[in-house]
Image (cartoon, rainbow, N blue to C red; front, side, top):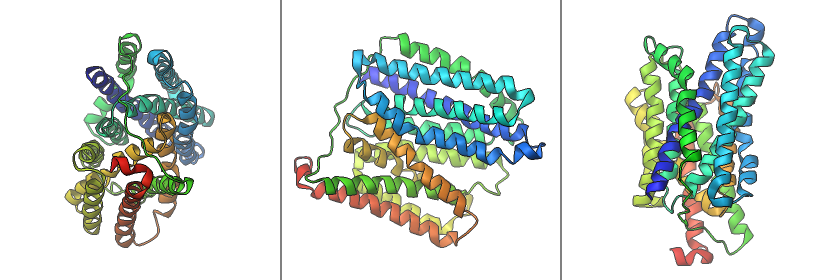
Length: 372
């Protein structure tokens, strides 16, 4: 367990750094071309290219990594992680060189390389975290730090005096990720497999319904995140960053709550609290608790999906990430429309209901009686 704890700390810090540098690069690209009407019109497509590559490539890379299945005492995992960080540094170097002469081509090249490196990192590190133990806490802690990185990147241009610190962090990222990666790669930290319990199903029909409901719940949760966008109109950068902190806390606490209270307790707590609070949004304090409570479900879906695809942790992590894209696209498309005061509570309730059905079906399936 001590070795896995060291792994987890390294992965959590790297996750913060990877998501921060990728998100910050996109924000800085948009700022660099803001005065050029032609380039500025391409900015939404740059974000789209990055997000599609960063998320939709994950199940593909995950299957590739799963194929090696921990060969050579985990050394192949180390190679994939090293490849992801190396690609990230290449993208960072390309961005830094193009800063003074940003063109449409360089915008899309930077977005593409950052997207590929992000996808590689998530499934290579994510697979290892999902193998640590039967508990959901490691997965919740790992995914949580990415929210902090994205949150810090989102305020890089509006943070006042703090912007200098954030921009300096962007420049110094290589001096953080390189030593951590080398410690992991050359250190005696061979992966320990925690032997988590997997789900079995008596028929392919039960299995298909559970898998589809899990993926749908992930997509719906993503839709709500982009549809609500409570940071819109908030000019206080501290308030915007605190929303990211709330998401970080929700994901971290969600894994712990799942281990201590079980899936039904976690799902019902999250769904009831977020549904009730969604009626009172636009109050900043309510916003923070709402974000925290709704993000409790993230480790629940991640833990369930890895148990549905045993020995395919990379694919499982990637599949969960890929289904964020439909929600991202739909949320941004429908954002200007609809009665949010009605739609948001309904979405909160539906997300929880789908996950309750997932765990009810798993519990009722005769193939899982030994685990009930």
